[in-house]
Amino acid sequence: QVQLTESGGGLVQTGGSLRLSCAASRQITSNNGNGMGWFRRAPGKEREFIASISWSGRDTTYADSVRGRFTISRDAYKSSAYLQMNNLKPEDTAVYYCAVTPSAGAPRGPSLYQYWGQGTQVTVSS
Image (cartoon, rainbow, N blue to C red):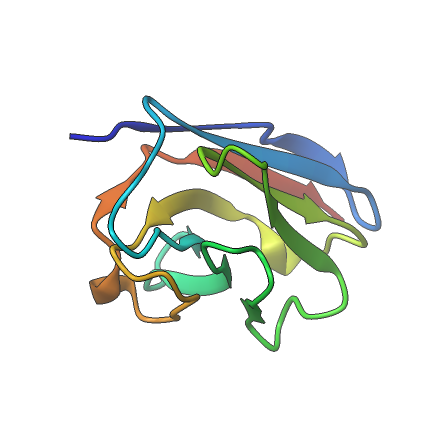
């Protein structure tokens, strides 16, 4: 079992920045490696894919709503992931979750992810 812990959320004004971190309880290893992703859920809305990164870190995928503003990365030990969020907007307000997929790629679908964190709240004031 792998536990994921998100941190870095908070309250920020429109146009501000936050950097979310996701730490795994142990180094995640598998035969092919594990991709990691970020999702969010706003009040009254369904969970939304934000970004994902492959095991190697060479491949990344972004939702159209955040492309150019958010950047996903992961550490060299493959056990942590980060989400740099710039030019934040009120519509970015949500609980943000990180997740790990058994795939080495960078998929979008939440059903492709095996482990999930508890989430961290991001609130962007107008």
